[in-house]
Length: 177
Image (cartoon, rainbow, N blue to C red; front, side, top):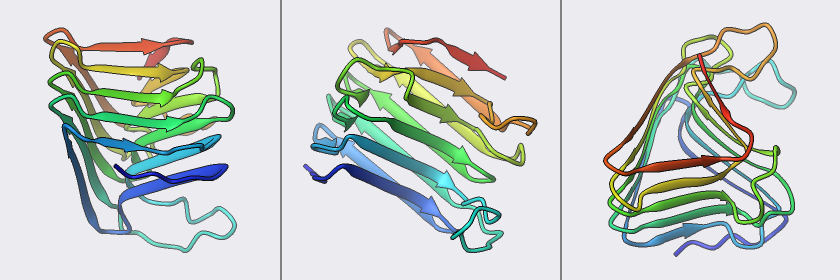
Protein backbone atom coordinates (compact mmCIF):
# COMPACT_ATOMS: atom_id res chain seq x y z
CA UNK A 1 0.00 0.00 0.00
CA UNK A 2 1.28 3.43 -0.93
CA UNK A 3 -0.19 6.41 0.92
CA UNK A 4 0.48 10.00 -0.07
CA UNK A 5 -1.05 12.43 2.43
CA UNK A 6 -1.63 16.09 1.62
CA UNK A 7 -3.84 18.40 -0.38
CA UNK A 8 -2.24 17.40 -3.69
CA UNK A 9 -0.71 14.12 -4.76
CA UNK A 10 0.61 12.78 -8.02
CA UNK A 11 2.62 10.17 -9.83
CA UNK A 12 4.33 9.87 -13.20
CA UNK A 13 5.00 6.51 -14.83
CA UNK A 14 7.27 6.59 -17.90
CA UNK A 15 8.44 10.07 -18.83
CA UNK A 16 11.24 11.83 -20.74
CA UNK A 17 12.27 8.78 -22.77
CA UNK A 18 12.00 6.41 -19.83
CA UNK A 19 9.90 3.29 -19.44
CA UNK A 20 7.88 2.67 -16.31
CA UNK A 21 5.63 -0.19 -15.25
CA UNK A 22 3.53 -0.50 -12.10
CA UNK A 23 1.89 -3.88 -11.42
CA UNK A 24 -0.61 -4.10 -8.56
CA UNK A 25 -1.51 -7.77 -8.09
CA UNK A 26 -4.23 -8.05 -5.44
CA UNK A 27 -2.83 -5.05 -3.54
CA UNK A 28 -3.80 -1.41 -3.03
CA UNK A 29 -2.41 1.78 -4.57
CA UNK A 30 -4.04 4.96 -3.31
CA UNK A 31 -3.59 8.64 -2.61
CA UNK A 32 -4.93 9.20 0.91
CA UNK A 33 -6.38 12.56 1.93
CA UNK A 34 -5.59 14.17 -1.43
CA UNK A 35 -8.14 16.76 -2.52
CA UNK A 36 -6.35 17.05 -5.88
CA UNK A 37 -4.64 14.09 -7.50
CA UNK A 38 -3.12 13.28 -10.87
CA UNK A 39 -1.34 10.43 -12.58
CA UNK A 40 0.41 10.63 -15.94
CA UNK A 41 1.27 7.33 -17.62
CA UNK A 42 3.56 7.43 -20.68
CA UNK A 43 3.89 11.10 -21.34
CA UNK A 44 5.94 14.09 -22.37
CA UNK A 45 5.51 17.48 -20.76
CA UNK A 46 4.48 20.37 -22.98
CA UNK A 47 7.78 22.27 -23.06
CA UNK A 48 6.01 25.49 -24.13
CA UNK A 49 4.45 25.87 -20.68
CA UNK A 50 6.29 28.01 -18.08
CA UNK A 51 8.61 26.01 -15.86
CA UNK A 52 8.76 22.92 -18.10
CA UNK A 53 12.06 21.77 -19.55
CA UNK A 54 12.27 21.32 -23.32
CA UNK A 55 12.59 17.70 -24.37
CA UNK A 56 11.70 15.61 -27.37
CA UNK A 57 11.79 12.29 -25.55
CA UNK A 58 8.43 10.70 -24.88
CA UNK A 59 7.93 8.14 -22.16
CA UNK A 60 6.29 4.73 -22.18
CA UNK A 61 4.28 3.62 -19.18
CA UNK A 62 1.83 1.04 -17.93
CA UNK A 63 -0.38 0.50 -14.90
CA UNK A 64 -1.68 -3.06 -14.54
CA UNK A 65 -4.28 -3.95 -11.88
CA UNK A 66 -5.02 -7.67 -11.40
CA UNK A 67 -6.61 -10.12 -8.96
CA UNK A 68 -8.88 -7.69 -7.13
CA UNK A 69 -6.35 -4.84 -6.91
CA UNK A 70 -7.67 -1.47 -5.68
CA UNK A 71 -6.52 1.91 -7.06
CA UNK A 72 -7.97 5.20 -5.79
CA UNK A 73 -7.04 8.83 -6.27
CA UNK A 74 -8.89 11.88 -4.87
CA UNK A 75 -11.06 12.11 -1.77
CA UNK A 76 -13.96 13.83 -3.53
CA UNK A 77 -13.30 17.43 -2.48
CA UNK A 78 -11.09 18.60 -5.36
CA UNK A 79 -10.15 17.38 -8.80
CA UNK A 80 -8.37 14.36 -10.19
CA UNK A 81 -7.01 13.40 -13.55
CA UNK A 82 -5.50 10.34 -15.16
CA UNK A 83 -3.72 10.86 -18.47
CA UNK A 84 -2.59 7.94 -20.62
CA UNK A 85 -0.28 8.68 -23.57
CA UNK A 86 -0.06 12.45 -23.12
CA UNK A 87 1.85 14.51 -25.67
CA UNK A 88 3.73 11.98 -27.76
CA UNK A 89 3.84 9.35 -25.01
CA UNK A 90 2.68 5.75 -25.11
CA UNK A 91 0.62 4.12 -22.36
CA UNK A 92 -1.39 1.09 -21.31
CA UNK A 93 -3.75 0.71 -18.36
CA UNK A 94 -5.36 -2.65 -17.63
CA UNK A 95 -8.03 -3.33 -15.01
CA UNK A 96 -8.51 -7.11 -14.83
CA UNK A 97 -9.92 -9.98 -12.76
CA UNK A 98 -12.16 -8.07 -10.35
CA UNK A 99 -9.87 -5.05 -9.88
CA UNK A 100 -11.29 -1.55 -9.32
CA UNK A 101 -9.87 1.86 -10.23
CA UNK A 102 -11.67 4.87 -8.69
CA UNK A 103 -10.66 8.40 -9.63
CA UNK A 104 -12.89 10.13 -7.09
CA UNK A 105 -14.02 8.56 -3.84
CA UNK A 106 -16.66 11.32 -3.60
CA UNK A 107 -19.31 11.87 -6.22
CA UNK A 108 -17.36 11.94 -9.52
CA UNK A 109 -17.93 15.57 -10.41
CA UNK A 110 -16.99 17.18 -13.71
CA UNK A 111 -13.58 17.93 -12.21
CA UNK A 112 -12.49 14.29 -12.55
CA UNK A 113 -11.31 13.08 -15.93
CA UNK A 114 -9.38 10.40 -17.73
CA UNK A 115 -7.72 11.01 -21.09
CA UNK A 116 -6.75 7.99 -23.21
CA UNK A 117 -4.37 8.87 -26.05
CA UNK A 118 -4.84 12.59 -25.63
CA UNK A 119 -1.97 14.59 -26.98
CA UNK A 120 -1.29 18.14 -28.01
CA UNK A 121 0.44 16.92 -31.17
CA UNK A 122 -1.93 14.10 -32.09
CA UNK A 123 0.82 11.58 -31.46
CA UNK A 124 -0.12 10.23 -28.02
CA UNK A 125 -0.98 6.51 -28.11
CA UNK A 126 -2.85 4.70 -25.33
CA UNK A 127 -5.01 1.69 -24.55
CA UNK A 128 -7.42 1.34 -21.63
CA UNK A 129 -8.70 -2.18 -20.98
CA UNK A 130 -11.38 -3.13 -18.43
CA UNK A 131 -11.85 -6.89 -18.51
CA UNK A 132 -13.54 -9.49 -16.31
CA UNK A 133 -16.49 -9.75 -13.98
CA UNK A 134 -16.19 -7.25 -11.15
CA UNK A 135 -13.54 -5.18 -12.95
CA UNK A 136 -14.53 -1.50 -12.89
CA UNK A 137 -13.35 2.00 -13.67
CA UNK A 138 -15.49 4.39 -11.64
CA UNK A 139 -15.58 7.86 -10.16
CA UNK A 140 -14.96 9.37 -13.60
CA UNK A 141 -16.58 12.71 -14.44
CA UNK A 142 -15.49 12.63 -18.10
CA UNK A 143 -13.70 10.06 -20.26
CA UNK A 144 -11.95 11.22 -23.45
CA UNK A 145 -10.54 8.64 -25.88
CA UNK A 146 -8.29 9.99 -28.66
CA UNK A 147 -9.22 13.47 -27.47
CA UNK A 148 -6.81 16.32 -26.83
CA UNK A 149 -8.85 18.34 -24.36
CA UNK A 150 -7.21 21.41 -25.84
CA UNK A 151 -9.00 23.86 -28.12
CA UNK A 152 -7.96 23.68 -31.76
CA UNK A 153 -5.43 20.88 -31.32
CA UNK A 154 -5.34 17.42 -32.80
CA UNK A 155 -6.21 14.57 -30.46
CA UNK A 156 -4.13 11.47 -29.98
CA UNK A 157 -4.75 7.79 -30.69
CA UNK A 158 -6.83 6.14 -27.99
CA UNK A 159 -8.26 2.66 -27.73
CA UNK A 160 -10.94 1.69 -25.21
CA UNK A 161 -11.78 -1.98 -24.62
CA UNK A 162 -14.50 -3.08 -22.18
CA UNK A 163 -15.05 -6.84 -22.26
CA UNK A 164 -16.05 -9.98 -20.36
CA UNK A 165 -18.22 -8.20 -17.78
CA UNK A 166 -15.97 -5.17 -17.20
CA UNK A 167 -17.66 -1.81 -16.48
CA UNK A 168 -16.96 1.90 -16.74
CA UNK A 169 -19.07 4.40 -14.77
CA UNK A 170 -18.97 8.07 -15.82
CA UNK A 171 -20.97 10.97 -14.42
CA UNK A 172 -20.82 13.22 -17.49
CA UNK A 173 -20.29 10.86 -20.40
CA UNK A 174 -17.41 10.35 -22.76
CA UNK A 175 -15.98 11.34 -26.13
CA UNK A 176 -14.34 9.00 -28.62
CA UNK A 177 -12.32 10.70 -31.38
